[in-house]
Image (tube, rainbow, N blue to C red; front, side):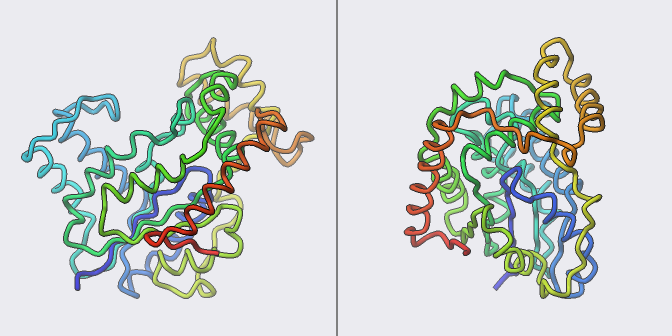
Length: 300
C-alpha cells in the first residue's frame, strides 16, 4: 500500500500554529521515522501555483474564475505532486485549505473549502488519506476568527459579522461533509479544541510519526499571541479609515501598546451572553451528531 498522506486542515485559531511549529522543530526526526512534514511556506507556494493553473493563470486567489478542464486540473495536480513523495508518509498542515479568516463575515463559514479540496482530489486519488480537523465552540471560534481577519488587514463591523452568524447549527457538519465529498476515501479525524490538552499527544504523534513525549516543543515566544480586547476594539474604531496594509501595521502597534498579558478584559467577545449560550448549544448538538457518525473518528 502507498504511504499515507495526512492533511491537518485546521481550523484557524485551534492551536494550528503551535502544531505547525512543533512539527517543524521535529522535522528531521520525523524524516528519520519515514514521515515528510512540509513547512507552511512550501505548502502555500504549491497551492498558490495550483490555483494559478486552474484560474487561467491569474494569481487572484479565491476570486478568479476556475477553469475545470481536464488539462487545467492535470496541471494543478502536477504542482501539488511535488509534495507527495512516493517513499514517505506525508504530513501537510495548512488551515487555509479550508478558507481565510474573513470567512466569518458571511455564513456558512468556510463555504469555499471545496475549491481547494477539489485541487487535492487528483493528486491524492491513489494514496490513503487522513484528514485531521479541530472544531471549536461557535462563539469563541467566530470571535477569534474575526480578530485574526483584523490582523491580516480585513474588516467588517462586528455587528455585520454577528448578524451573519446568528445561528451556526450544522456548520461544522457542513465542513466535514465538504471534506467527505472531495475526498470520499479519506479517514476523517476530529477533536474539540476545548479538549486539545487531552488529545495533544495523540494529534502530534499521528502527524509526526514520533512519540509525543520525545518531541521538542516550541517556546511561547515562537507562537504569535492573540491581540488583547483593548487592541481589537481600538482597531475596530479606526479600521474603516485605513487601507488593508495600514491595518496590518496598526494592529501590530496596538498589540505592542496593549499586550494581552496586561489586559483587564479577558478575551475579545462581541456576542451577548444570550447569543453565546445559543451558539454553544448549537455546537454541543452538532458534536453529538459528529460523535454518532461512523465515518468520523472523534478524539477525546
